[in-house]
Length: 188
Image (tube, rainbow, N blue to C red):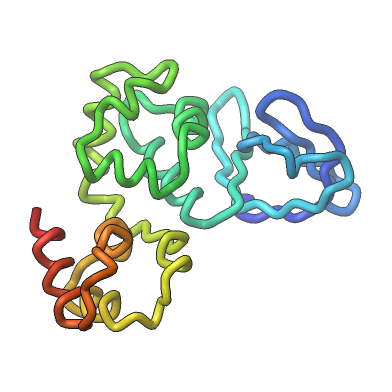
């Protein structure tokens, strides 16, 4: 099983790139953006998808992206290509937020995803995505913040905390007031 690839981009077309890893080129389906230029160094966490008629590699820049992709393809009716379309529709945080918040319209707006598949994604993954905790919003805050530490100690997940702490009023002076405000809003 191929789980990690690092090398230079030698060709890009559509949603795939060929990565040279010391003389061997691997075709990897990935979110293609401006950083994919021929000669650029790229590193991917990969999902090696094997079927009886093909073997494909799907690449992701972070392990959180890979983990979310693997959870998406575990849903009946969501194959790897549909999962890549979903992954291209937003960040890990946005997709996890849509799942946790029962936001079917987020998924229905994605080409090829209907109401039934959107409902399956939300229903089947709601309890499974809690472990995917990307900290990009928290990295913008002071990670050592006593409020975040206190809420984590109370059992809240970092992606839940990041949504609430970022909306906390700036006029709350004490740590206790901020924690109280966050607890009220996490309970909603």
